[in-house]
Each structure stands twice: as C-alpha cells, then as structure tokens.
Length: 201
Length: 201
Image (cartoon, rainbow over all chains, first blue to last red):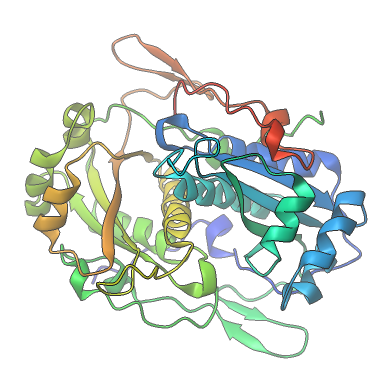
C-alpha cells in the first residue's frame, strides 16, 4: 500500500470536539463567513439543496433551540458559540418526488466546506443528530419538501488536542479511529470492504 | 445582511473544471494522499460509509471505466489525470434497511474533504453522475448494500480561472453562480428559501 503524505493542516487538525469554551463568542461576520463557505460548495446541477439557521449563544433562536437538544448534545451543545440547523431540500413541494438524488450528499458537502472554513477561522465543528427533529421543524416552520437533516455546534474547544487524538477535560481520550486506507481504497472490489472500527468521529 | 469576509483560498479558488491537461500525471503517493483526506472525514457515529476506486489515466481500471462515461464526461473525463468511483454503503447486506441515515451525506463530506486536499495539491475536482451506473457496478463487483454514488475527475485544468468565474478553452464563460447568502441563511423560516439560479456548479 502506498503511504500518503501528511494532509493539509486544515484537514489534519480537524476534529469534532465534545466541549466548547463558554468565554468564546462569534461575531455576525464570522457566522456569515462560515455560511459563505457552505454557499459556494459544489452540488449536482448546482441544485444547492441547503439552507441554514444560525443561532449564536444567548440569542433568541439559541434559546428556542437548546431545549430540543438530546443526549450528549444537551451538555455540550449549549456551550458552543454557535448552533447551526442544517436543512436539506429533499422533495419537490409536498410530493415524494426527490428534489435531487444528491440532496443529502450535497448538504454533507456544504457542511464539510463550512467545517474547513471554520478550521481556518480557529473554530471547531461537531455535527450531530441528537435533537428532537419534529420539534425543531415545528419551531422553524419548515417549508414543504425541506427537512432538518443535522445540526452542528461551532466554537473553540477547551484545549488543543494532539492531531488524530481528542483529549477531553475529564481525562477521557477518544482516539480518532478510521478504517485502514487499504480498506477505503478498493481495487475494484467494494465487496472486500470491511467498515471496521466505529470508535469516534 | 452581514457581509462575509473572504473565504480561505482553498475554498475561494475551488471550482469544477470541464477540461483537464493531458500532459499532467498523478503519482500513487498523490492519489493515496487524496484518499487519506476522504478517510479522515467525519461521519455519523464514525460509520465511514465510503469506499473509492482510483484509476489513473492509462492504467487498466481507467481503460475499463472510460467506455462507461456518458454525456460531457465522455469528452473531459478521460482527459483527467485520475478518475474516482465513489461508493456508498447504503443498506445492510441485501436488505432495504439503511446502513446509516446519513450514508450519502457522509460520502458527500468525504468527497468534499478530498476536494479541499486536492486544491492543496494544486489539483481540481469535478464530480459527476454522467456514467452508466449498472455497467460500472458490474465491472467492480460491488458488495451487497454498497452502491456507486458518484464519480470524480481529478487533474489540472488548462488555465487558471479568475476566482468565482470559470473560463473554458473554447471561450465559453460559465459564472459560478449561487443563491444569495440571505436566501441560504434563513431566519428560522426555511419556507422562505428560493433556490434561485442553477447555472453552474
């Protein structure tokens, strides 16, 4: 197997923290710049099947979102400087006809571009699905065909972790594990893929 | 509307070319580094629902893939230094039970991370769906539950375009158009989103 070279620092140093510094605040320009990165992501036929609701810690939308977080996100979500609701254009109006075969794929791309831009702004992003989707869709009056897909917490983690290993304040170490490159790059036989470990993201 | 600051150059200068320099070749280390970026992308519960087949211009896999390209990709696809087949883990084995609700979303993220790494290596990526999916799935002996989702052409475009505007060798200018930021960032009402122009990606 050919060994790769080190990744660009914006990718190499990226991780998904589970805690955020509450003394950090994001200004509206920083938020607009994050969304600008998502906006310029590529998409199938330029379909741009995405929309975002941004809530800065303490603002009105933030206060309405926080009670709808679930699981671990109830702890660290409210501590992030910014909560994002990531919406996907799944269907055409009220039909079950897909707006785009790649709507979720492209929303994932847009959030990934936002994540890279966040790194460039000294921020970290943790995406999550642990929230009450129905409640948040009611809260936002989501249009027909649109869906709340994921949320993201954006901010500054308490300590800078070593690359490829996340250390948490309580001393827990959660390695950033992935399948081997030889499993990810198949030789024309996806049948041989073994998804392997699921320890972290 | 708050004006964003300029994006990081890796994002600001990214575009999806429709032509590639045939005098450019990618070595195996560069290919491994691209896939390394995809490998380290985040995914729901670290599910890593992705796999990739890499074919460098002229190698055996490349020669088997090229006849299955369709539409415009028949012209520019073979000219790229690298063709990637991006596979998604959609279902559990032969069932219709989803492997992950976010499989396509996460594959999109992985390809986006690969795209950013490509920019850092002086390369451009154009993703596409214009290929005979059934034929390529037969060719690759894709495992149950896996699906060929997209392909990507990776290489060096003939000329460096101005940011936010793509110029093609035949003189055609295809602006990189996107919906306004005020449309992408909703104020808690996705119902007000207007997808707008679809000129490019």
